[in-house]
Image 1 (cartoon, one colour):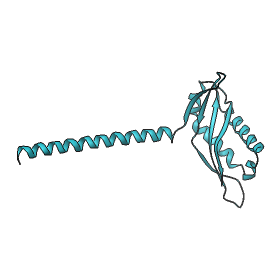
Image 2: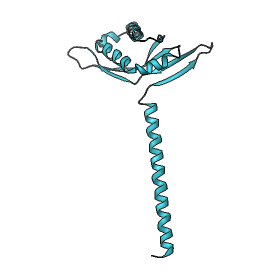
Image 3: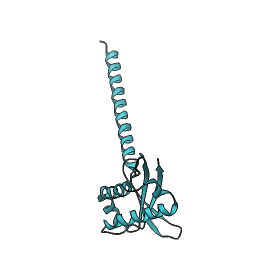
Image 4: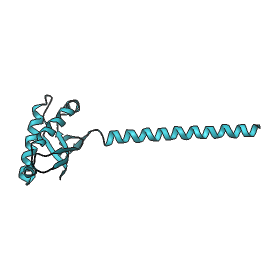
Length: 152
């Protein structure tokens, strides 16, 4: 093997190594983006035009079977929790599994007819807010919003 062939072989392995490192970096970046954006909650601070500040805690989407007899019905929804006390952020993160369980168990008892009008949906929202607030110590939620709501 000549000197030029050895140099060419070394350059080729160098390029292959750089390509492998680049692919690994891109894969790691994509994994980080997906897990932080889509698989975990999102906390966001929002300021209203009048200067009032509140925080939003977005839970992962829910898919829950409804209690309708003789029908296989389910609901899929995304819930956003709203609060003002910034100390509550840590408690919400620590109790996220309990909050999700509370919501799932509550929704299992509902039927499609319970979501038939805006007034009924508001009542469900208020009941969920009350149930979640019962488990919180640091502060209380000021709002609960359905970002997506699909019943099938």
